[in-house]
Length: 325
Ligand code: GLV
Ligand code: MG
Image 1 (cartoon, rainbow, N blue to C red):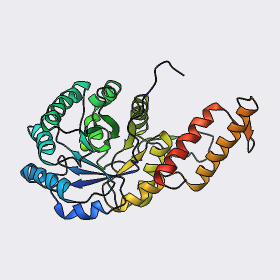
Image 2 (cartoon, helix red, strand yellow):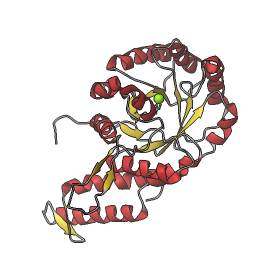
Image 3 (cartoon, rainbow, N blue to C red):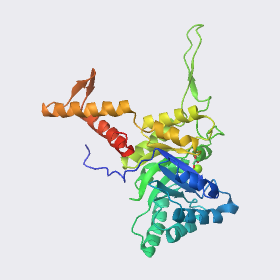
Image 4 (cartoon, protein in one colour):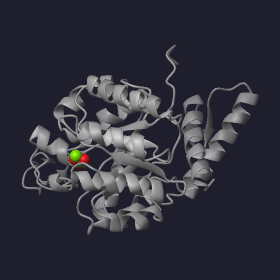
């Protein structure tokens, strides 16, 4: 282990994160009683410029008046390049009370962006005597943000999670796509020529590098990596495939841009009974090994060692938080 200890952020379930445009008040009550782990009220890209002021008022009122149960509640503020952003932060802190847990900062480009928002939030919190400190969720969705992702991830103790915003990332990198998330059939490999035998074409995941890079930056700083939106809400299989590959790479969860995606995300990002059972058996086997002074043993014909303990502990801990262990 390194001499540098990575502190883990406040543990929270973040399997599903429901996006709710703050301009559409009709959606709030349903969101509050949904099964989403985290909800963010959106003041940014789902809200047209003419509706920004009203959306902000709606968000403030909703945070105060609606019973959000034990959900983690967040608001996506506008970007630092707009004049809406400072007022978003100030009104939320001065008027919305203490229920708000996080603010989500879009299109983060440099660590200084976080420094600037941190300064504003810190001053407003102090002025209000707010004792519950707001956490930050950051969207990595530009070429600049991805190029600086390591510095960004370490920019403030308020940061809890990094999110991959595939739509803006595609626009920023000029990737060839016009949809939100999902593969592009042009991104693939053709197997080598083998005489006259038919050749196979394998689709690849054009977002693999970006997500893997963000996951590493997040985990190296004790943060939760979360995969962003999948736009085609009439394609549950497509959503699950995207969610599964993000889960396999280490993401904690995925956005739901439609209520139908919440259950899918919760399912994919919850360890299965079989996985929990296996993890518990690994922990038992390793306890036995430790008692016998061994560092590694075999279980079901496979090697397990001290690294397996941490993996199994992570899994059991998550299942306990979900209430399924
Ligand atoms: C999310 O904000 C995205 O751009 O995908
Ligand atoms: Mg975006």
